Image (tube, rainbow, N blue to C red; front, side, top):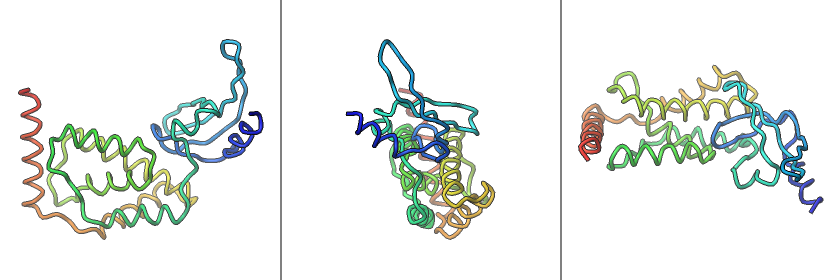
Amino acid sequence: MNTKKTALRDGFKPGEYIVYPAHGVGQVTAVEEQEIAGFKLELFVVSFAKEKMTLRVPVAKVASVGMRKLSDADGISKALDVLTGRARVKRTMWSRRAQEYEAKINSGDIIAVAEVVRDLYRSEAQPEQSYSERQLFETALARLVDEVAAVDGSTETEAMKRVETGLAKGPRRTRAAEAEVESEADNDDSNEEAA
């Protein structure tokens, strides 16, 4: 059992950047042992500088919470390729789509996060997004940019440029199609409020 703990702990080292699905890119700052209710627990101390937050994750729970190493360069390349694809917007109620987008963002899967960025992206020529749509887009964009920057060793600005370049290469929906999706979303929101 002790060997298993050591093997798990060795997967993440202090100073290493990781992805914690619910918060994005963080840095393992230490591995510490605490006694809680008479049991000794080994914990990863993970710091999220942007959110000014520190999280302690039990070593035994790493897999179940989805904490993972950063993607490799190939994974980042695949995620950026996703951005160049056609947006896939389902014709379901906004509340259901919003839940699906949030689940993708919190999955910690870089490809799923890139899909949310691609699907919710609006160019300057397109109509504005609703507040909730914008919030989801910005969360997904921040997670994607943070991981690209951490993997590349680049600045946030440079990573953002790579993401924007990918989005610019993608096919844009026409104004008419965009307006149709927008009015459909408004109708769905109205129907939800009436229910």
